[in-house]
Amino acid sequence: MSKKLVMLSVTVFLFGCLAWAGEGSWTGVVSDNHCGTNHATASDAATACVNKCVQGGAKYVLVSEGKVYQVDAQDKFKGHAGHQVKVTGKMEGDKITVASVEM
Image 1 (spheres, rainbow, N blue to C red):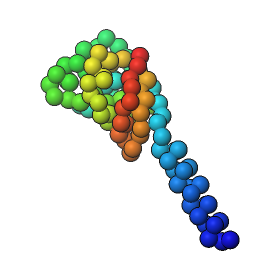
Image 2 (image 1 turned 120 degrees about the horizontal axis):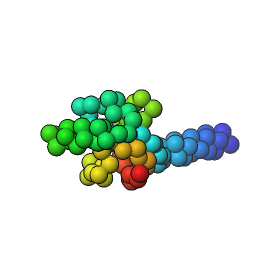
Image 3 (image 1 turned 180 degrees about the vertical axis):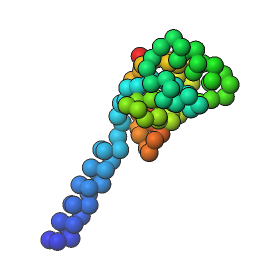
Image 4 (image 1 turned 60 degrees about the vertical axis):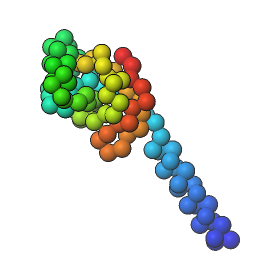
């Protein structure tokens, strides 16, 4: 009986962890890894600066609630520089594996 209870507890715990690690969504402003939180609000100036930095080799990042998150799928952020967006994906540490980006 106790083995069954332990196995049930472990199973519930594992499925709970998997559900917690599922997809989520975050809103924020698309910036670059050089400027970071300097572009915490969307503006034309932010768009111009982020585009210039990315053309110079910087990577897109998401600034949300004062935190800077690294993002993969850099091509999904083209056209969103300096804009407020909603990013859907999976968070791992300070990196988001991006499933979608929308205005």
